[in-house]
Image 1 (cartoon, rainbow over the protein chains, first blue to last red):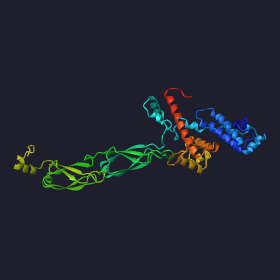
Image 2 (tube, helix red, strand yellow):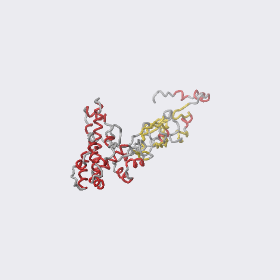
Image 3 (cartoon, chains in turn blue, brown):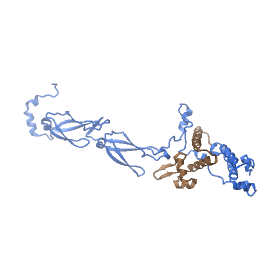
Image 4 (cartoon, chains in turn green, red):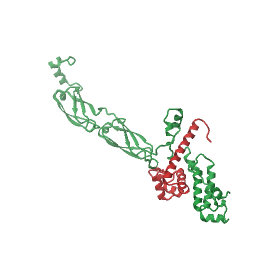
Length: 300
Length: 93
C-alpha cells in the first residue's frame, strides 16, 4: 500500500486545505467519469480516493501519523459502478445526447448515413405519441360527438369529435400518449377518424347533397315534406311544378365551416310513380292530350 | 429494474430536498409514470457522480451543469462510435 502523502503528492506537514486542494486536482484528472475511455482511471482514482479518505479526516490522519492504523486500513470497499458504465452502454437512457455530433449527420455521405442509422439517442425526453383509429357515424362527423375508446392497456380515452370533421382527419389529445422522462412530458394520443358513409348523404366540402323521393302529386301540386339532415329531419316546402332533378337548398343545414357558419344541404328531387301502377293514373294519362304531345327529348 | 422515489432515496442516500432540486435542474431525469417517478440504476450512479463533483471536486452548480452536459455528449459520441464499429462488422472489445 502506497504512502497516502505520496499518492496525493503533499508533504506530511501539509495543512488540511492543502490536502483537500491536492485531492481535488487529482480527482479532476483521474475521476473515471471524467475519463470514460480510460480503463486504468478507476484503479488510479481508487488510490487517490483512499488516500483522501485517510488524510482528509483529521482524526484518522492523526491515528495514521501516530502509526495506529496503516494506509490499507482506510481502503474503501471496491465500488461497483460508475456513471460511465451505464451511460456508455447500449441500453436506452434519457441522458443520451447527440448534440455533440448532430452536425455530422446532416451531410449526404456514407459516414453521415451510418451515423444516422446508428444513433439511437433521444434528443428530447418526451414520451412517444400513440396512434389509434376510430370509426364514427356520418351524422356525428357533422354534429360533433364524444366517443370513448378503449386502450390496449384497458384504460379509456374520451375523444371529443369536433363538428364538421372529415374522414382521415386526426385528432390530437395532448399528453395522452406514452409517459415521458423527467420534465419532457408525455406524448400525445393521435386518433385518426374514419367517417362511415351514410348512403343518404353525400358531402362535398361544407355542402351536403341528398336525393329525396317525392310523389307525383307533391311534384305537380307542391307541398311540405320531411327531409332528413345530419342534425335531424326538417320540413321543407316543395314548390308547385317541381321535377326530378330539381335542386332545392336548405340554407345552413350543411357541415360547419372552418371560419364560422355552415354549408348548405342541397335536396335533389326524384319523382317516383306509385308502384304497382295505379289504374286511375293510367286512365288519366291515356286521356291526357297535352301529356302525349310533350316530348322531353326535344328542346324547347 | 425501476425504483420508486423512496427506493431511490434509500439506494442513493440523497435527501428529499436535494433530490427535488436535482430533478428541478434536470440533473436527474426519472421516468414519469401515472403511479409516480421511476428511477433506474443509471440514476443512482449519476447521483453519486454529482455528489462527487460537488463535494469531492468542488464544482459549483454552473460547473456541474456544464460537466454533465458535456459528459452526456461525450457518451453520446462514444455510443455512436460503438454503433458505427458494429455496423462496420468489427467485434467490440
